[in-house]
Length: 411
Image 1: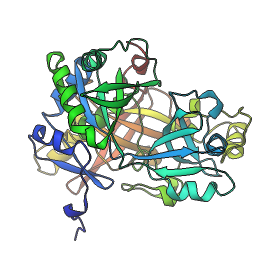
Image 2: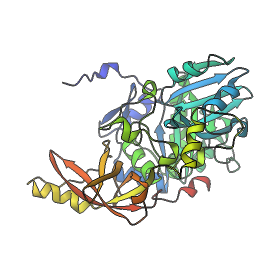
Image 3: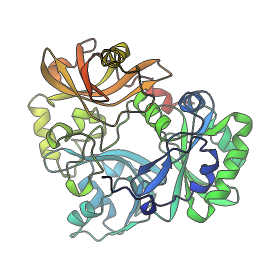
C-alpha cells in the first residue's frame, strides 16, 4: 500500500499562479512539492519552447548560500571546476564527486558577491557538514526565501525585454544581473535546460505572483505559455541533459533522490561515464574530492562506459502489446525506469529517460553503454516491459544531444 499523503506536500511561491493553467489536473511530486505534469499538452508545450516562449517553476530545487572567508576554498575542494574562474554575477556548471570519483550531483555554482556563492540542485546538508569543519564558512539553506521561474524559448529575450524595458542582448550565457519585474527586484541569469535560449529568474517568495503576472502579460503577444514537468523532461532529453535519481544515482546515500528501478552498481557513475568530462578541471591547482580517482581513470584508458543517445524502434513496442492482446501504446510520458540494454543476450548497459519526442518523431533515450559497444550505429536492444509483458525493442546508438546544444549559447 502506498504511503503517499498529499497533505505532506508543499506549495511553491508560484503554485497559485500556475494552477489555473493546469487544465489536465495532473500533479506529480518533486521532492516535497507538488508540480504540474502537463498544461496544454506535450505537443503544444514543446512547440512553444522551440518556436515561442514558455514559463516553468523550478522552485523545488534546494538552494544553498555558501559565504565567509573560506567559501571559495571550501568549494574548490568539493567541485571539479576551478572556482577561481568564476567572477561575480557568473555561474559555473560543475560536478561533485566522492573519493572514488563517482558523481554526487551535477549542478551550477553561482557567485553573487566576492565571498558569497550559491548552488542549486539536490540536498547537500550532510555532504557540506562532512567537509566544512576546517573552513571558516557559513552554509545556509535558503530554499524557502525565493522561487525560481524560468523563461525559455526563442522569444524569451523579447519577453524579458518587454517585462523590464531593458536591453538583454549583451548578457552572455551563465551570466546574471538584477532587474525589476512587476515592481519586484529579481536576479536574472541566462541559463537553460532545453538546448535553446532561456533565462532563470530568482524571485523573492512574496513577489512571485506579481512577477508571474508581469511575465505573462509581457509574453502574451509573443506566444508565451506555461509548460510542465513532462514537456520539460522531453526537452532536456533531446538536449542530452541528465537528472539524478534516473540517469544516475548519487554516490553518497545522504544526497540521493528517489532512485527508480536501479541498483547501486549500475547507476553510480563517474562524470566521464556520463559525458560530463568537460566539466572536470583535472589540471586545477587545488586538490578536490575524487580528483585522484579521476586521474587514475584517465590514466588507465578512460571510463568503462560511455554516454550515448539511443533511438528505439517504437513499432517493436507496439508489437509487444499486440502479441499480448493489449491495445498498443507508446506513452507520451517519460519513463522513469532504467531499462537493460542487451547485445546478443548479454547486458551491455542501461537506457534511461526513454520518451517519445514529438519534435524528432522518434522514441529516444539516454544510454550508459559499455565502451566497446558505444559507437554510433551499433545495433542493440532494450528490454521493455508493458503491463506485465516483456520483450526486446531494437535500439541504435546515435549522437547525443539529439538537438544542437550550441543553440543554447546563441541568440
